[in-house]
Length: 300
Ligand SMILES: [Zn+2]
Image (cartoon, rainbow, N blue to C red; front, side, top):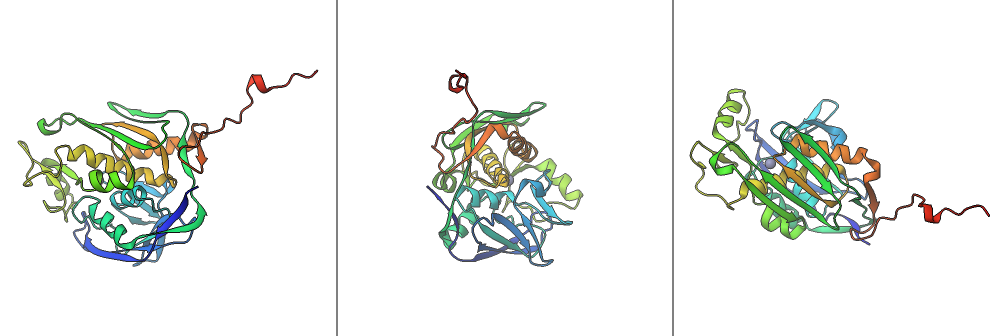
């Protein structure tokens, strides 16, 4: 049996918010068993659980909100906490955004490693998928099918020579995440960045924290991986699926999806209660407790 885990000690860092361009102070702190992951806005004294019911916006990033108080761009940090197996922790921020840092989850992995993990005396339960659930919108789709572990396969296809077709598939563990997924940075198209700026967004965005794609190629010096774009989509998907509130056991297959579809799949999965079960170990078979004809005894 696996046990829930929290951080061994508090850690923190400072960075700027992608949209506001303002400095934000962030702290990751241990939490008691069953607390889950949550965000605490220290400037206004509001705590927002990292759960689907608190999702407020899913356009360029994932925003959570409660009682009119929000935290933007939670997905990269949530991705790192979820993939590294942190079940219970408090994220303190003194403003409305999680710092963007280098646009990837690598700095958060370093922070979590610096904090260390501590087992809690409460068993962990996994959300194990037992039959496929799918969301299709136009040419975009995402589905989850049964598997003995957590896997994400992601296909992207944009109308740009650099990004016409990329597909990656990872079994998500603390190790594969830290090595192959976390370092992949946010990306955006130059034409979109210009539009965001005109609308007062992405004021903190720069080549220091995003891969920017122009008409002919990337404006940054070089990519961290040839398929960095598709890897970043896996990172985003893991962060959005963290909002399920349980470690996931299943294979996610996404094509041209994004935050809205990730959240829609999570919502549909939770609502389809006969498509999953809570188990104490990922490899445990899910017992079918519905009566089967062979087990129904005929009255004699
Ligand atoms: Zn992202």
